[in-house]
Length: 396
Image (cartoon, rainbow, N blue to C red):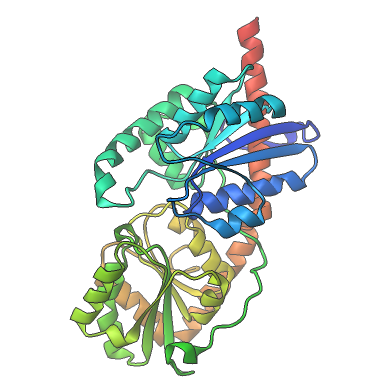
């Protein structure tokens, strides 16, 4: 399934899609929630079920505001959700089953296919290779990443990837290119309204310079390299401050690193925050020092906010912003390059303004939710046509 040819798609044909997601946290949760907006369009109906556990981290605000169907389970090995899902599928009678993620999601689709009373082709969204959230899960990381492309190639009708980087990763591991369609993430064109954060709340002055991060505090986010870069920036610009929004397993380790480098008074850990847009507006510069990304929603949010951006050259980051055009791009794991780029942004405000304005324009052109939904709907309709064609061929 190569490119999307909208003219060849029967736009008025009603289609039904049953969407299943395991857990509700991070970028996949936001993606799944936003896809439910397809229900506001004519001739497409999306029923979304979220498998959730009280012990799991959950993006509760999105789950509730998008009014998704939450099914509580006891843990990863509780399969009591299967029969209720089968009942929902049989009542809904969808054209497609859409699952989100890698081999685990594909395994769930396989289980459902064997339980329902009708033909049920399935498709999958792919958000990038699995990165273990904790050291205890590192052993399963290579197994899941090895298994996911194999299951896509053998079992999935089609895959929608959130970045060209993800598509190439799958192709390199044996998935046919024509099975993969790229639809970049999108977010609301208009940012949510919010109450401004006062600089005095962090003891900052009007002429202080704020470098901001909004991220899970996890090794893969490269935050230790940003902290290593910060002393050189602070030496040249004593009024600069680093604000870290988010929490995670590395919080205490990162705080200790700041103490050891003697920069703790200029680095502010504010923890998990609900008013994310207010923090973007609070920043002068947004930094994304990740060691791995796929199609970062945080980066899109910074573009929408018109921020000056410094990002690492990993994953799909440069599909969102390009070096010297909408951002400054640096190699990952390179504290010196990060420090130099942040210094350039501070020392050349005209350049920072030019890049931030260009980032906002690029966001408006390519990365709004409407753009994402248009392309996703076209992909789903094409998948329905492909499934019907394959079923006809099998019955002949």
